[in-house]
Image (tube, rainbow, N blue to C red; front, side):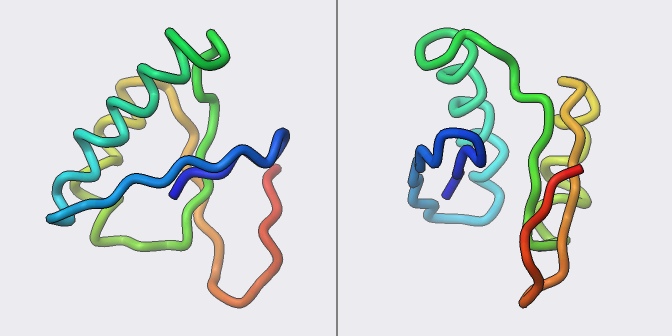
Length: 80
């Protein structure tokens, strides 16, 4: 699930396998850039699911210049 903090818009993608997240996130970012808002994603905040981000998405974030922030569970979500 991706939630835009500014607008509250939510997008939900169902995954069959964990490693599909890289492909789905790439599709999502392209949709945002080309169709939805015509802007690049600057940052993403996650729930510290390290198995997704350490090996699967971190290289993609670095390549695309996306800042990744993680928060601890059961704490308020705050960016910046």
